[in-house]
Length: 168
Image (tube, rainbow, N blue to C red):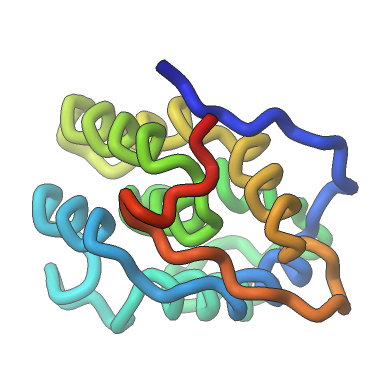
């Protein structure tokens, strides 16, 4: 059974709008911590410099037009969808839909698919995105009103079986 939210035709979000949105989302959840532990990467693993995936996203997006801590090629005007689709940190990819309130059933399926993927970050990140493509993430952000640049933003609802309002 799937509980995807259909995209509702919002304008294409850019990296600046995504950064503003990310700043208003919840930090972490238990499923993310379990995912990081199962992969052995993320907060507290392999010398990670960030203290949360939210911080990881904020620094990544803040420095997106520079080489940043990953010495990437600077880029201006990159759509948020392209940023999401280029990431190769499975917990970072997973955090955005989780913090956006995507259905827990889909989040669980993404974890299962990522853990079954080849043991490299690119394959695991791609597995998360196959279950949780940008259209679903963007629709969840739109549903909570977070992707409206310059508007007041309400935090996403906390995840959990008793608070999962995104499942159909």
